[in-house]
Image (tube, rainbow, N blue to C red; front, side, top):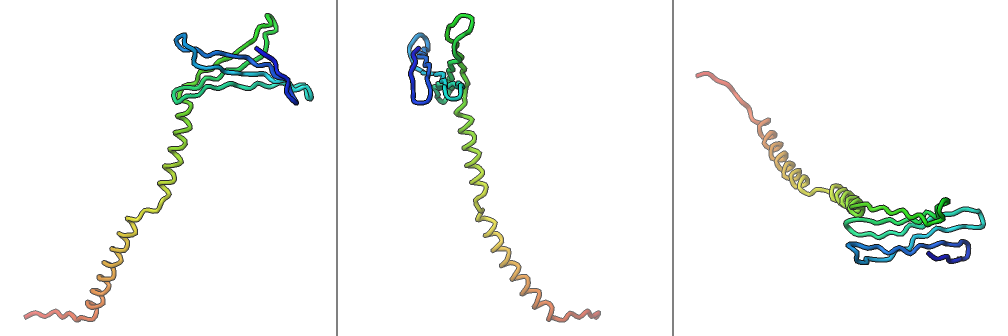
Length: 134
């Protein structure tokens, strides 16, 4: 743990070594910031993110009973897949909004058939039919 003064706050920073199978993976640096101007504090979360999982490490301050640092760690699986799913939805919506050319071609062929039927109807209306019994 170390402390570093900044321009408008003082930070208590924890150095957390992340291990997997007793092998070091990385270092994370969560911190707690104290703002003297308004007597408030805030936490800065350290995040290790992969496609499979996200590790969030939060330094919550010191325990009032033992004065030892309190660290919260959260392992959230498949967080990136939520964002990728959102991208798939947006892409699918864009594809669905594209105009479809096939109905336009079908309508053009249907108009040609309609024009042919109209011409046949005009010829049939000028013809006379007679019924005779021989």
